[in-house]
Image 1 (spheres, one colour):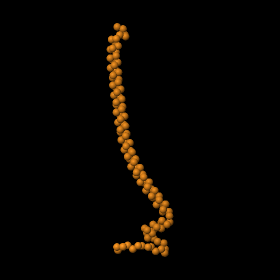
Image 2 (cartoon, rainbow, N blue to C red; image 1 turned 180 degrees about the horizontal axis):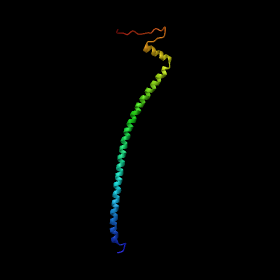
Image 3 (cartoon, rainbow, N blue to C red; image 1 turned 180 degrees about the vertical axis):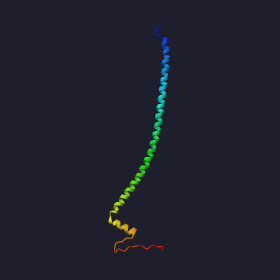
Length: 111
């Protein structure tokens, strides 16, 4: 028989076909493993991002509260630079009045 005979080709094709099937199977397993890993990482990162987003929303809400409190304190400090406001606080909290001023106190009923 010569080297291009039909018998040799058919026996060679069986060997090549089995190797090709094995390579395709290995390739399919590798692709499946890769996509499984990628899916796992995707869902794990999605859950982590959701948790971080929730934490960010809480911190932004607390930041807004702190900013409002800071603005209120700045307003109070600016009012403390006014002499008239200081006088009002002294009258209200410490019953301090300028000389010659008579405090007006309403009578409390029930006593």
